[in-house]
Structure formats: C-alpha cells, structure tokens
Image (cartoon, rainbow over the protein chains, first blue to last red):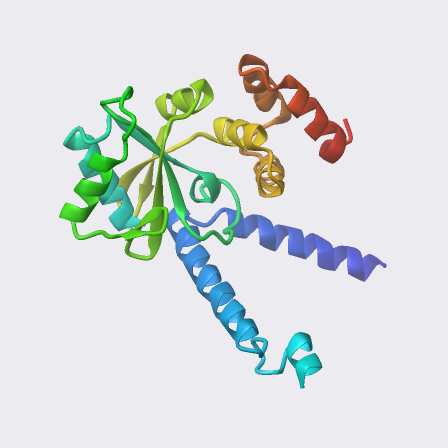
Length: 62
Length: 169
C-alpha cells in the first residue's frame, strides 16, 4: 500500500511538472497529441486499431 | 502557433480587429498540462461591431496572407483558427482584461484564467467543466476568483451547481 502511495505521489509530481512547461512547448505537444488521435481514428475507421489489430466491429463483420 | 500570433498581431496593427485574445484550450494550456484540441479559438473585437458580417474583413485579410478557410476555421500552419466575435459582456471584458503572453518570442494576447473558467462555466459542456477543474487544480484560479466573476455576470446558480456536483461544497 505504501509503495502504491509513493507511485501516485511520484505521478502527481510528474504531472505537475508537465504543467510547468513553456506555453509554446505545451502547444507543440498538443499538436502531436492531436495528430496521434486523428491517426488512431483513421486506423479505427479503416477497421484496425492503432496496433494494427482488427477492431471489435470489424471482427463481428468477419 | 507563432504564425497564428503573427497573423493576429498584424490584424491588430492594421485595425482589422480592435482587440483579440485566444481562449478555450489554447489559453488553458498556458496554465495546465497539454490537452488535445482540434483548433485554436480567438475572441475578436471588430471595428464594425454593429455589422452583421463581422468576419468578412478577417477572412479577406487571411486570404491576402495565403491562409485558406477550412470548415468553420482558417488554417494557419498546424492550427485551424476559429474567429469568434465577442458575444456578451463577459466575453467583451475577457478580451479587455486579457494578458499578453509569449510564443517563441512573439506576443500573443490570452484570456486570463479566471475569465477562462467563467466563460467555461457559462458554456456548460462537459469539456468546459473539465477545463474549470483543470484550472482549479493547476492553481491558476481559485474558487473565490470564479465566485467573484460568476456573481458579476449572473452565473451564481451555474456556479453553485458546479460546486455541488464537482467540488463537494
């Protein structure tokens, strides 16, 4: 339990540090996140998820 | 975003807009972690406030700089930019009280955290509520700050509901 608490505390510190990045750096990160999301959506719509596996919907059709 | 900042500042210096300030997720990221967003939203005050078509001069200016419309936005580099004329007294004051931030050495006017949270409160979508919580958690704004603006702009009941639902107050 103590280990878990330490992990969460470290995660909180890490998350807080990310919010302290420069505004421009966070905006650049946001663009990367957006491109990743759009790529995942495209993969999903094409019948695979981002790992290349067929989606549940696609499997049902097969 | 540097190209967006340059375009907005050029609009300001040529009086295409009287004032502007980025808001929404782009403004939020000044205070919180990076979040996913599809576009950049910009509040604008135009010289012809009474005009029905406030956006035509904006679109013409963007076109003259080689930036084309993309849906409801104008594509400026990596960012689709949505220009939103100030729509109520809260938005007008949010632009008036905006701060000047900096993107890679380029000034960019940005709505302050307390106005950002109060605009989100007035809009009231789930993602707006998430924005208020993120701003509170970051320490950029306090519950007391929002209370002051919510009272001034007649959003007390929305703020009380929000606090009951999310802040256990």
